[in-house]
Length: 353
Ligand SMILES: [Mn+2]
Image (cartoon, rainbow, N blue to C red):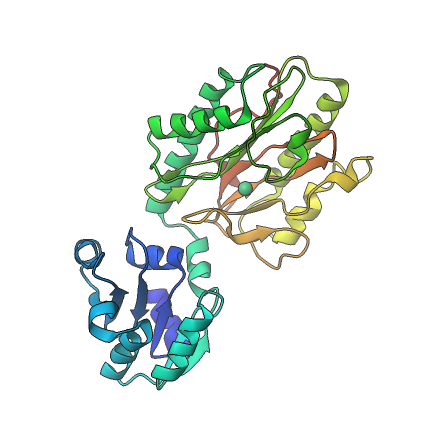
């Protein structure tokens, strides 16, 4: 809140309208849906409808609740009321997360200047507080434990869908929140599909099995990937796996407070640059993780982000060969002053089941 008020003062804004659900959740600690915040240095307003007013009174006691549906007719009506109450002339809003209809409502009803203020809360979110690191660590532990359990279930004849469902169940049994998460568990040549969806395909002998998954713990996410081989690995599987391992190791050795995300990408290509596999590497090699699965900072050749201590992020270079398969190893790490701490305990050595 202090960071937000400083920003508002610098930008000469009287308040900030927050609409992106993950930002509403982050700022207010509200766990429900369909709600907005209008935060001013004088008063904080929580805009919702009668389904959630009681829940908000428990979860966000320091907010003034505005029931837009019964009392103000529209979202814009509620914001207009709050802005007028404090004589506010200009408000920041998340231009990348407002429907056209809502925007038109704002233009009609609000007698204030609307100033786009995108990515502000996202900046605050990228550096994690100790209690957030605690939840992220537990989310990663749960995913690592589920990995040990799913290894015992992977065998010839079981379908990808069935294994993906078991992975979700194992994480809930290990303590994860029950909110669904789009776990990826794909096999064979399908592993070159970066975000392939688990199918009816049954596991076959010799398959690569790629598992990219995670869970939520108190709203904080884990995101990890491991790729294993069913049976004995072929020469090529070994070769690509070793290359992938090296790429991950190179990036992790490089990362620490203050380094550039683009340089991290360059480092990731060191091992693969002079091999025939270079055309098959993917350039998005990692992203922040918190309450949302892809958040600041992003590591790629296009990124201008600087990595900071307190960032929690994935390291996931990958090699994807159409028609053959893909290998990805993904860790989730905490950036520190001098290096990093890996929150994923699952082994990165090649596993042959
Ligand atoms: Mn990821």
